[in-house]
Amino acid sequence: MRLSRYFMPILKETPKEAEIVSHRLMLRAGMIRQQTSGIYSWLPLGKRVLDKVAQIVREEQDRSGAIEMLMPTIQSADLWRESGRYDDYGKEMLRIEDRHERDLLFGPTNEEMITDIFRSYVRSYKDLPLNLYHIQWKFRDEVRPRFGVMRSREFLMKDAYSFDLDYESSKVAYDRMFVAYLRTFARMGLKAIPMRADTGPIGGKLSHEFIILASTGESEVFCHRDYLDLAVPGEGIDFADAASLAGIVDRWTTPYAATEEMHDEAAWADVAEGDRVAARGIEVGHIFHFGTKYSEPMKAVVTGPDGKETPVFMGSYGIGPSRLIAAIIEASHDEAGIVWPKGVAPFDIGIVNMKPGDADCDAVCETLYAELQAADHDVLYDDEDNRAGAKFATMDLIGLPVQVIVGPRGAKVGEVEIKHRAGGERETLPATDVVRRLA
Ligand code: ATP
Ligand code: MG
Ligand code: MG
Ligand code: MG
Image (cartoon, rainbow, N blue to C red; front, side, top):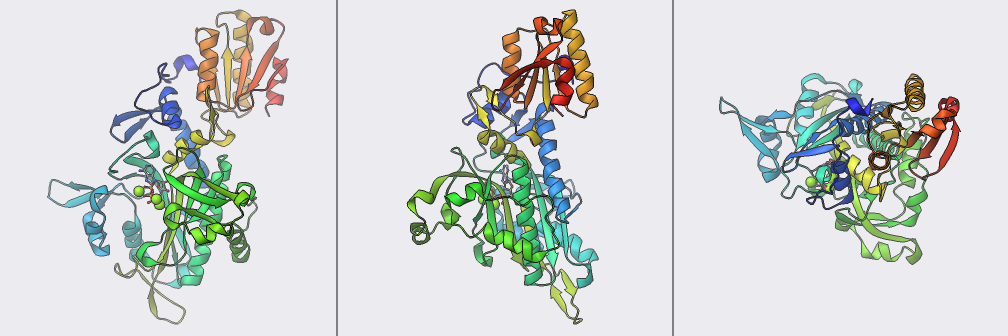
């Protein structure tokens, strides 16, 4: 992409309404624009990051055996009356009436709809296990939308729903998602710590929130230091091997970890003082086993091997890709701007032409731009006629992992400079070596 033809409205001023760094940087980098309270447009740069984050989520869901589909944003109130949640959900639900005076709502989540789909088609245990997911916009009329896309009213969610014959097999489904989540967040350069979460009136211990430690997080969290260097399972992990999944979940749930609602002072006192991490955290994912809470009232039943009908065991598993982007920035930035981890950067490489119009600079830049794209990199080429200082500031602000800087003196002798955004290391090398160097 040539910057001169792109749409990347950088803000020079720091927006006053933004209280936390990710919100400020997303506005300044021209990633998002608020349309009304808690509702955002994703401008081109932001849209690229959203797509990359959603793609990582998708790849790890697929790897674990979940199957993608797409449900609508608008739902019928009748389904929610069946489960009893239409009245329970309260004011967070945006209720709509159509021209025929039928009650609709903008979905805050999809348990009812997926249960309805399941019961319409699946009859036998032979079709299980099944895990269906979608990545779709949700709406929750939050009392206090704030911090940009961190707590917005309209937000993107990946929500998966598992269906199994009994508790034991639904526990395996839960473990699969647990492990998929560990991999998903690690691929985004994040350390997400699974913390026991409240299961509410359903009980049981199968609910975990995945939390990123960050000083701007909304919840207070307590965990053992061991979590900071636990190894995340590699991509070779066998999702059909229930025992090894359970082993991983065991390792990741044994050291103490809890959010304030679940915090247990007595257990915390048993953690050696030097091992205690008391911090603030951001909830980026939440997995939940709820058994037959929806299948029973909504009559989603399957026939087991014994010929008897039983309500199907279910779980639901959410990740917020839009909130994740803010969380990634909270975890990875410096004074100059965003520092994108490799897998989620809007472009992999930025080329800075320090003197557009200079024949050598233009020629070196054009060649590199073509070669790097041919080598499968996403490249943003700053070909704009602008002060060098402003160009560098913009590149640092938008945080691409690598900058290739082309100035007139170097270009004359065929040399360019590479700057790594994260550590700030610089190296000068022949322009002809750049593609190999960045391979
Ligand atoms: P919170 O405690 O922050 O209100 P939640 O517990 O209500 O979140 P869940 O119902 O567990 O959220 O939804 C799954 C995921 O969706 C969350 O872990 C989070 O990543 C994302 N999410 C929820 N609410 C919002 C929101 N208002 N804005 C952005 N993302 C959200
Ligand atoms: Mg909430
Ligand atoms: Mg929560
Ligand atoms: Mg939650």
